[in-house]
Image 1 (tube, rainbow, N blue to C red):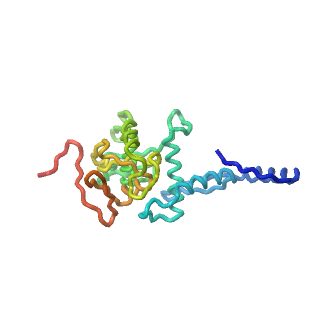
Image 2 (image 1 turned 60 degrees about the vertical axis):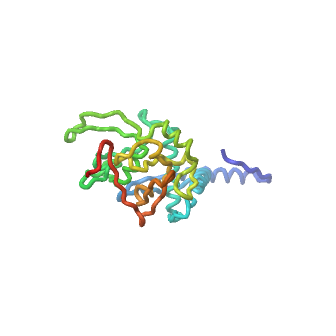
Image 3 (image 1 turned 90 degrees about the vertical axis):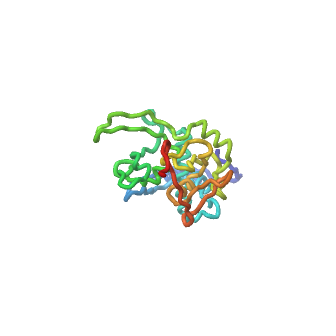
Length: 258
C-alpha cells in the first residue's frame, strides 16, 4: 500500500478545486500503445502521477546491476526489469483468465528446432514472429510442453500438457537456495526460474542435481549469451563466452560412439 505523509497547510477551496480538476484532466490523457515492428515490440505511453510513480518504483527496485559481470546499460536494465515484472505477474497466477486459460506465451516449434539442429523449421512466438532456438531452449527449462502431431498441415493428435519441472521439484529447489545462483546476484529465489545445467532440450534430466535457480537476466546469459555452467566438485562454475568449455551431451537412452 502507498505510504502517506500528511502535511498541515491552509489552502483556499477554489485552488484545491482547480488542482483536482487539472489532475483529472491529466489522468484522462493516459495511454499505452504496444506495437510490433521489425521483429521487436515498441512501447509508447503516458501515465498519470500515481501509476507512473508505482511503475518507476518497481522498475528502479529491479534495475540495479546484478554482480560485477553485469555490463548492461541503465536503459537495458530498466527494459529487463519491466520484463521481469511481467513474467512474475504471469507466473503468480493472479492475472484474470481469458477463455478459462491463464495468460501465457505460446511458442510453436519442432523437436529439431528445440534442439537447434541445422535445417530445422523456424520457431515462432506467433505467426510471422520468429524466435531463436536458444530462446526456445530457455523456455523449455521451465515451460509447459504440449505435443501436437500433424500430417502435412492437419493436426491429427494433441497430447496432454506436461511441465518440464514439477511443482514439488520447484519447492525443493526453493528450499535449497535463497537467491539466483549466478555469482554476485542477489535476486530472491521467487524471482528466478529453474535452469537445466544439462539442457532439457538436449536430453538433460529433470532432477535436483541438474537444476539451478537463475534470474531472468542470468538465465538468458546462459542460453542466449554464450555463458556456460559446469559442475565443479559439489558446486558449479559459470564460464564466460570467451572461455567456453566443449561439452558432450547425450539424450536419454543414447550411447557415445566408440
